[in-house]
Amino acid sequence: LPIARQQFSRLGWATNLRHEYQTFDDFTQELLPHLDGTKTEEELVKILKKKSRKSFFHRADSDIPHKVHQSLGLLRESAFLFDDTQIV
Image 1 (cartoon, rainbow, N blue to C red):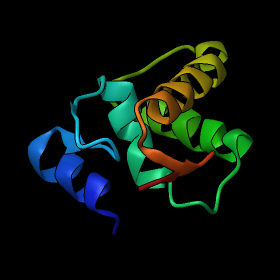
Image 2: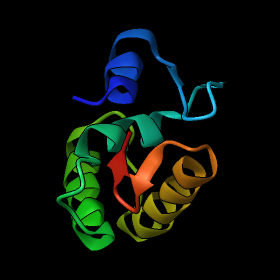
Image 3: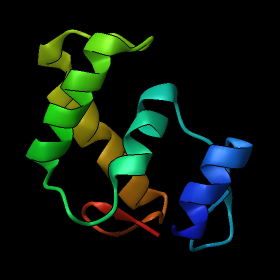
């Protein structure tokens, strides 16, 4: 696994490509394990909708596409994404 995903899962924070410490909200942390470069944004939405129905972070299905898009944008801006869906 990439170092950032390991740091997030163990420590709740990670160091980005600019060597800055970063934390993220619960939704973004739920998204992180799925950012392996094999899924489109639409596939990530489907996964998170399914998880949301079974999980503590339950959200309205209509809110999830926006939240996934927002979280991916935050990860890109924070220098964590290698490409659109793969965390480094």
